[in-house]
Amino acid sequence: MLDSSKEYLRALREGNYLRFLEWPYVIEQHYRQDNRALNADDVRNLIVYEWVRHGVSGEDIESVAILYAVFMLEPSPLKGGLAWSLTSIVAALYQCMAYISCNVQIQQVETEELSCDEIIELLNTLESGTDLTLFNSMLQKDMQTFLSKSESIEKSKIIDVASHINAITVLRYRAEEYVTLLESIELPKDELQGTRLSLVKKLVEYLGKQTELTDDVQSEIAQYVEKIKEMQPAQVEEDLLNNISPPSLMHKTVGFMVGISARFFSVLKDSFFEQEQPLSLGDFEHVKMP
Image 1 (cartoon, rainbow, N blue to C red):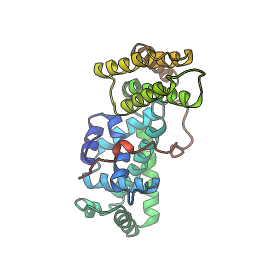
Image 2: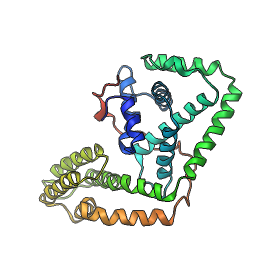
Image 3: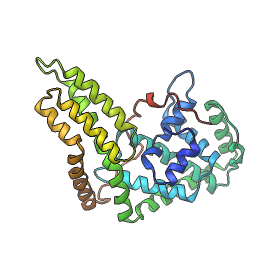
Image 4: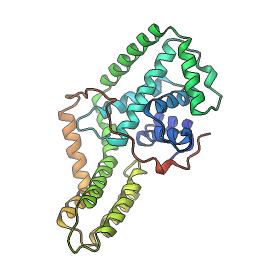
């Protein structure tokens, strides 16, 4: 995890997309009050505030458009918490773009450090001083501009980004599937099932922190798989482990890229706001946001 919004925006601009998608979780953890989770609208407004403080650039819009195009692929390499994170970011970006289009005086929030409630009040005050009809009109226009930009990105660029993201996320999803399996079945006379479950959960935690499938990451994954295989897993577990291991991943990544190339943008999601709820924020509890 990174320490500030400035660093997360730098990650976006450098193409470190999976790291960037941690941003809404870190923001939520930083601003939550009395240890109560914030709702989706609050998170969106906080992203707007943080983005405005550090500056919204055309490069940001372009980069998020690429990420959104990757999300729209079928099958999508961004699911669950990653999908929630991206849709929160896109919704916030629409609002930022509308502020710019309506010349909303956003410089007021560039240097202030406020609480969640104060930020919501500030944004409401900024919008109340704007012609709401004009604001909503520009919001709709900017949404269409963004979607058109996303749809016009070169196919080769989208596939390149998707392949890098999928290389690590496919492992996350397989490991999560393994956890679900072990939690839902009871294997008779299997004294090591609980031990395997504990180790697979550690693998899920490890994969959740990785943003790139480097040689070191592949080596670490292989060690997890080897240790689990030493614990006498059932055949159904062996199949999952083979899907998680790096050699199998290479075949799956090739298959994934062939699949999305053949179905490129063939299916559009009805509403990108209808996503799963965010995952646990436990990994971000100690992150500070200067």
